[in-house]
Length: 246
Image (cartoon, rainbow, N blue to C red; front, side, top):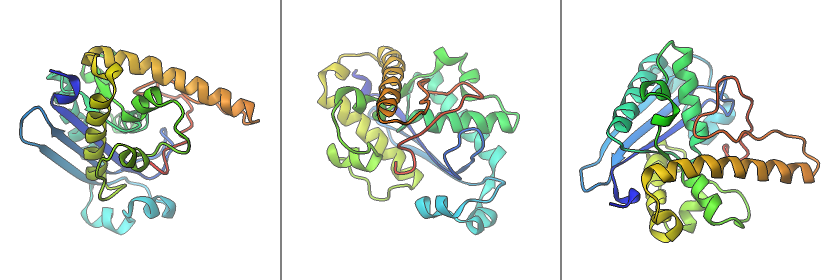
């Protein structure tokens, strides 16, 4: 069976900001879809334990009042999310996340913050991760796509419905559908097995980061762009040029 026709664990979060070392999850969704089976979905509204900045609320519409009134504790949500993804990976169900470097790194830091075992550790280390990232895939197969590669832009390009951008459940499902479209549309991706696809994305993400950093340098911007994927090593500075509009 092709990797894109298999069972997929679609994952997305919305956060207090884009600093992977300090910002927190405010909503999350995991939807296990495909493979000829019924969809299983979980959603979390999370009290991050810190104020949600107004600019973040403007993006995802989650307010401080909402999370204080209805949100679950961050430690509880982080454990449940991490356990669900680890259980999926144990069954060789890959995690699908758009710009996975951000979402999975934030989840990793939340686990560490609350004294929980991070996802990679639960699956035997980085080699136990299986991740599909439509952001990395599109940057590889369509090099000259002009403008920002947001989830909304790519969904429009591949005719994938996205009814409510920046709602974690809608974004997660859109990422899974986008991964399916990419697999169907590009022979280079279609011919890979799941493990080859994951290993190739590690290389492609590193190359894409180097290319972006070189582009910035050419235009007088002295910025470091992290190339590690799908989880940034703990304590590493990183720039997310496309995250706020994703």
